[in-house]
Amino acid sequence: MPSHMTRDVLSLWPEGDGRNQDDQGKPQFSVFLPAGTKARSGKAVIVCPGGGYEHLADHEGDCFAELFAERGHVAFVLRYRVRPHRFPAPQIDAARAVRLVRSLSAQWGVDPGAVGLMGFSAGGHLACTVGTQPDLCRGEPDDLAERFSARPDFMILAYPVISLLPPCAHEGSAANLLGPNPSPRQREELSGHCHVTPETPQTFLFHTADDPSVPVENSLSFAAACRARGVPVELHVFSHGPHGVGMAREYPHLRGWTNLLLDWMERF
Image (cartoon, one colour):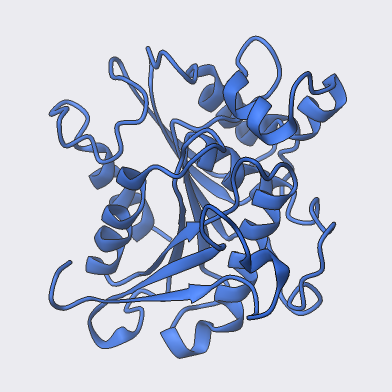
């Protein structure tokens, strides 16, 4: 980690809360603070790694938080609940993270109206679900829910799972999130492109056209839904590349996607 940056780890839920007891690690987030421990930009980004709702991918976490902190943003890497937990546990954790960042925004110099969610693959599905339906998941109590909105102000979705409907569904994510044989109604409820409204946050999308795991139609359908409802959207589709590239350091033709993202963030 760069020497000018600081890192801390916070529990997502209050001590003594039963959600802190988890064989795979309690829900929490790592906080990455830029020099001076305050956001120079006023923006905060909560990073949701992918992993098919089965695990959390290491290469889609800290390295991005460090990148954002270097640019003067406060960044967080969210450790949310995955299998054997099912819906709505991950979504409740992500909604809590947005509320918690807003509740603590003053101490980090964050504008509570500039809190974003970033997600990769299944983490993109998680971010998109909260972004399009921030009040969907209230099955578990959250002491911050009455005071702070869970709706992010912007979304960054990298090769995201958007649809759980055939033919574009990532069936592994669907099974881990909803269990075997989810109903058509459950699939539709958690297919982000079906729930875009004019209030959906502005969104940046990155995908490769021949992604063999999560079809590019996921990003295309979400971008189309945003366009149809007047939601600002920026979509970058690269002609070739595997799924789960992260920063794409091993793929020279894809490395520039993070620069496109950082440039986009400078424009609002």
